[in-house]
Length: 427
Ligand code: SIN
Ligand code: CO
Image 1 (tube, rainbow, N blue to C red):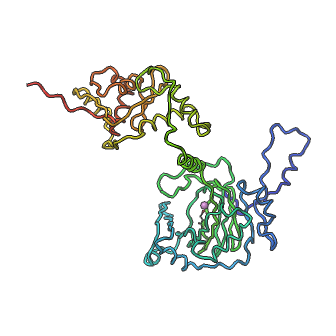
Image 2 (cartoon, rainbow, N blue to C red):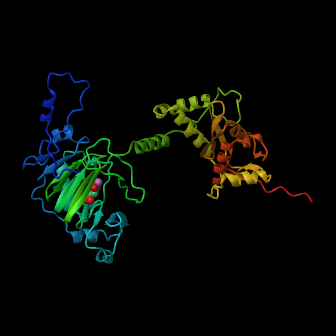
Image 3 (spheres, helix red, strand yellow):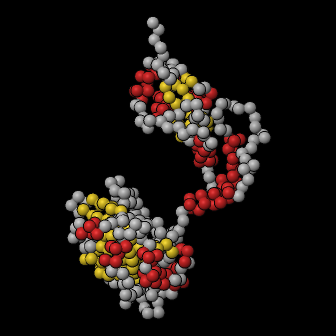
């Protein structure tokens, strides 16, 4: 059960551990107080340096009165007007309590959208309001101790009673400033709280949410949440919330951008090269010597990639590299039974002429087979056969294995292999 109000916890609780008994394992440092009061000269309730060391990216913090007396510069009507603009990013989230359903209606809207909304349980959220309204941008002064490039936007929400976006996690830090009215925030500080998503909505809502704390925010209160903290804000009566959201690129984005940047400046005379090549052990095989060359050529980029991952990436990449044709199947996977029947009726298998095939070995019998960027697991005999032959006869021994049929079914679905025409019947 969520607690009714946040229970401020202090570091004093550590003194309880300082008894004579030797601690067996080093205890995780106690979380700092969850709730503080702001003062005129300390809107964060503490100096920014302390906030950064103790809370930033680490722990939630509720700051009572952080923006006490702040005059909300925008009305719900202004916000609705903004949400009708073509270029403004807006969404309405509606919660249907009876069926526990959530729906998302993306903007832009017309006036009629708003007149057609029910009395309660919905919220309008508008992104980047600081870019449209200089007074809203003034709110960013609250986070002037942070690097400007770390700040993303001020998102403004107007919610009717019961409205909210549902329990979720964000991947960025956020300062939730209560502007007008009251909103109850429930959060979970449980590190291992489940993070699986509900499958029935595009809203990325948590399938399970068990709050450890719950508190009502009044105008001027600010809730800071680091990334990955499950939270849910529900309006108690109509309210407006201003979220100062931070930005932090995903490592994958950094890597991709850097790779593109470096690639732009590399001459295309610098290529995969194999002056040490030896006669192929098996047709189409990507062996350890190939992977060692690739790893060496990629230099620091390949450092963090495990051997297996590098092999799977290279197999996919090299079989789709510079393909002059787009290979598409009909998208419909045949059943294994249908594949079997086709083979029994004498239909041979043909490789798509534009599909390149390669494979890596798994033990003595298994293989990952790559075809035009796709990958299937199959017996090594089938991988070798498909790399060596453009046509496989239906009675070939490589097709007898059940997993060979599964792989074939998948390759048929993506168009990398197809059945030859039915053999002509003799008169
Ligand atoms: C809001 O409803 O204003 C904020 C939504 C959130 O990120 O939790
Ligand atoms: Co959120």
